[in-house]
Amino acid sequence: MANVPYPLFCAALGGVLAVLPAFFHGPIPEKWSYFYYGNTPIDGATLVWAYYIARGLIGVLVGVTAWPVAWFLRGPLCGAVMMVPLGFVALANPLCGGI
Image 1: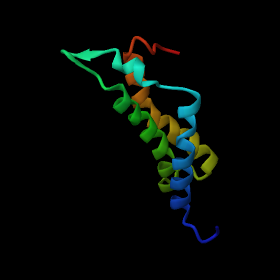
Image 2: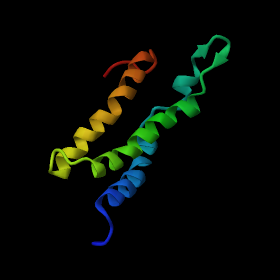
Image 3: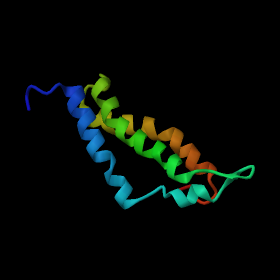
Image 4: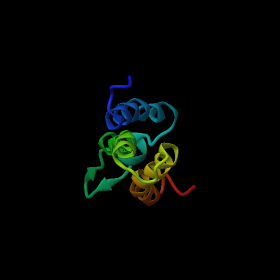
């Protein structure tokens, strides 16, 4: 374990932990498939992958950043940075709403 590079460890751990939220909370594809762009429905199953990918990249971001020095401060900071754009996407969906 000591020979594993820190960025690789963070990326692997982030990838494993990224699938956990899908079991406990959304977004669910049905919230997005409700909407149409012209006559074409939005593919909610594809859109929710943006959330899964962003969650998975948090570990990579923690591994490759150097500020702040303490990893336990970097994690929440990187998580907030990665999820802010998707938070705005969720706020634009009237079925999701604000907090």
